[in-house]
Image (tube, rainbow, N blue to C red; front, side):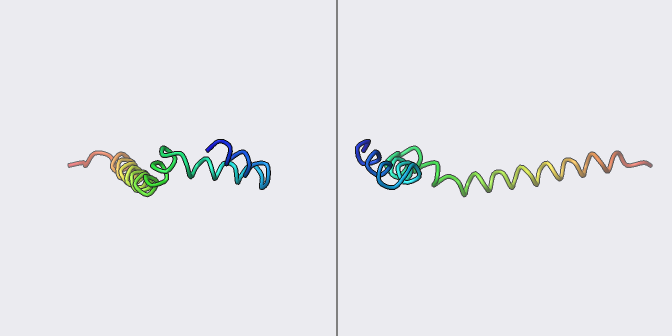
Length: 63
């Protein structure tokens, strides 16, 4: 696969070379497939942090 990526890099530039390497690399493929899940986790963390900030801002309830 190294020869193919080198040829693409020579003919079409670095971006094409990196695309060929990325298409071949199973770890990159897995990472790309996990991106939607990572985005959902990040959104959930942001929601939890916002709820935590709201609770801290509200303070204790006076009686």
